[in-house]
Image 1 (cartoon, helix red, strand yellow):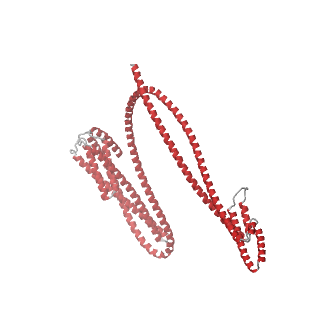
Image 2 (cartoon, rainbow, N blue to C red):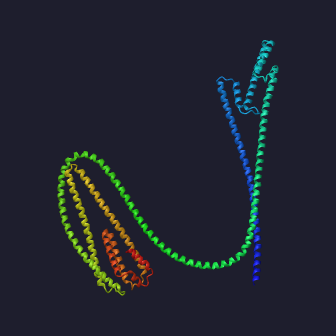
Image 3 (tube, helix red, strand yellow):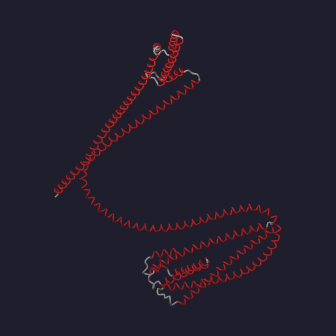
Length: 608
C-alpha cells in the first residue's frame, strides 16, 4: 500500500513538474515579447528625439543669424554717427578710415578677408577717383579748345603728379589710361563686378561649410547614440543572465517545496477546522460587544442632547447680552446729547424763573393730595397684611387635609380591587377642597399683585417728595423735574424688564414640564392594556390631564403666569404623594401586559 501511494505521489509530482515547465516556457516567451516591445519603443523614442534636436538646431541657427544681422546694423549705425561727428569737427575722411581699420584689426595677427568697412572704403576711393578723372577730362576738353596742345600736355603732367600723391597702388594704371578715359571706366566697372562676385562666392562657401558642420554634428550624435545603445545592450544582457540564474534557483526551490507542501496541506485542513471554531466564538463575542456598544451609544446620545440644550441656553444668553450692550450704548449716546443740551438750557433758566414761582404753588397743593392718598393706601396695606396671616393659617389647614387624603389614597392603592364608584362622596370632598385651594391661591396672587402695585406707588411718592426737596433747593426746577421723570421712567422700565424676563423663564419651565407630562401620557397609554387592574393609574392620569387643561385655559384667558405655576406645582405635589404611597415598580410587576417597563421607569425618573 505504501509503494502504491508513493507511486501515485511521484506521478502527481511529474505531472505538476511538466505543467510548471510549460508555465515557465510561457512566461519566458511573454518576457521576451515585452523586451522586444521595449527595445522597439526605445528606438522610436530615439528617432523622435533626433528629429526634435534637428528642429531646435534650425531654430537656433535662424535666431543666431537674426542676432548677427541686428549686431551688424547696430555697428553700422554707430560708425555712421561717429563719422558725422568727426566731419563736424573738421576731421578728414582718411584719418577716420585709418582709425576704423586700426580698431577693427585689434587682436592677435591672423589671415583674414577684408572687412565690410574696408571694402566700403575702397569703393569710396574708386568713386572719388572716377569723379576726379571725369572733371579732369572735361577740363582737358575745354583747354584743348582754348589753349592748344601745349597746355594739354602740362595739364596731363600735373594730373599724373596729383594721381601719384593720392594712391600709389593705382598710379601705374591711371597714368597709362589718361588718353583712353573710356577704358578706365570699363576697368573700374569690371573691378566692382568682380568684387560683387567674390562676395557671392564667399557667401556660398559659408553656406556649404555650415552644411558640412551640420552633417558632422549629426554623425557625432549618431556615434554617441550607438555607443549608448552598446552599453545598454551589455547591461541588459547581464541582467538577463542574472535573471536566468535566479529562475533556475527558483525552479529547484519549487521542486523542494512541493514535497514539503504535501504535509502542510494536511496541517492546513486541521487548522481550518480550528479556525472555524474560533470564528464562531469570535462571533459570539462580537454580538456581546455590539450590545454593549449600543448601550454606550444611547448614553452618548443622551449626553449630546443635554449638551445641545445647554448650548442653546448659552446662545440665548449671548443674544440677551448683546441686546443689553446695544441698549447701554444707546443710553450713553443719549446722555451725551443731554449734556450738550444742558448748556443751552442753563442759559434759558434765568428767563423761566418767574414762571416757576407760579408753578411751585400748584405743586404744593398737589403734594398735599398725594400725601392723603398715601395715608389711605397705608391703612389698606395693614388690612391686607392681616388677610395674609389668615390665608397662611388656612394653608396650614389645607396641608393637613392633603396629608390625610394622601394617607387614604395609599390605603386604597395597596389592594388591587379598589372600586372608584363606591367612594364617590370622598371624591366630592376632595374636589371641593381642590376648588377651595385654587380660589385661595388666586386670592393670594391678586393680593400679591396689589401689594406690588402699592409698593410701586410708594416708591413714586417718595421720589416725588425727593423731587420737591430738590426743587426747593435748586432754582432750575423744570430741568430737575424732567430729569427725575426720566429716572423714574428708566427705573420702571428696568423693573418691568426684570419681571418680563422672570415670566419668560417661568413660561419655558411650564412648557418643558408640559412636554414631559405629554411624554408620560403617551407611554402610559401605549403600555396600559388591563383597565381592571390599573384603573387607579388611569383615574390619576385623567385627573392630572384635566388639571393641566384647566391650567392652560386659565393661562391663555387671564394671562396670569404665576397662578399657572402654583397650580402646576400643586398638581405635581399630588402626583408625588401618589408615587410615595404606591411605588411604580410594584405596579409594573403586578401588571402582566406592560411591554416597555424600562422605558416607563426612565421616564418617571426624568420627570422626578
